[in-house]
Length: 347
Image (cartoon, rainbow, N blue to C red):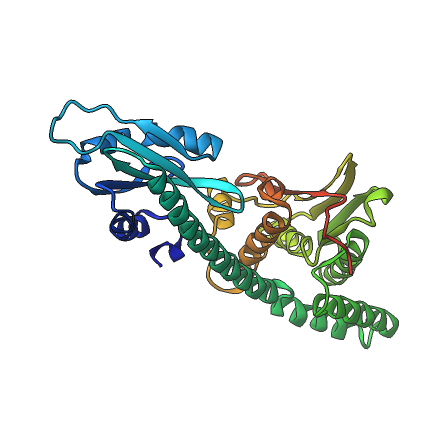
């Protein structure tokens, strides 16, 4: 049960004594992929050589038996069996049983124990994934639409009711379309065309509010419009660009959205020429180490971190957000998505 929290030093130290007793060996060691996590038993002068014994198993994923030279006459350790610990067919550590000899029975027993440990580590990963999913879903719900945006949009529409009723009607229909898309409750994926249509409505409402202060440039390759993308993965990037593109400026802010065909991938970038951000703040934000408390800045941080989390969960770490920024230098956020991915379809 100590491994239900994952392959950690604390868990390994708690489990090592029970596992050594179960195997009936003089000493037992547990490692992850880089370091010794726990040693239990006699003759701990051999603990310095554990990683050397574990190296072959970590690389090959196979059980290995090694001789253990020792000059001490009272030492009971002369051989070791090292078995891999794995989750999702990926070797994450080793379990090593030390003794005077390594009979076939000890090898089989060590492999059985390793399988029990593997099962606990798999459960730990499932628990962790479930927690991440719940957190991501909660952040997605909070980041879907800003209360400030709703208030400002309705105020802008109200300002046109008397002076330009037709414009007010058009904006109200766009607002209805935007909120209908943002609050929809089915489907984890949509097409890039649908996502861009919602963004266009958002920008139309923002331009009605800010007028000439907000300029927008779009360059979209038609061949990438059918690509399936995670629902609401681009809107938070655009909201962040508008917020930073217009903040503390005396001249108009420019937002540039580009979607290009890049062979097997689709590359989308959202760029503003605004105040920029500290790159270290961005790194910590995406790592989940920093949240700006309160208001729209918090929503921006949650939105960016949520998009990055979802992209990595769906496509792998190589498809997270790439952010280029600096104080006073504007911000460019790039998203690279595979055009085709098994199990990823727009709904």
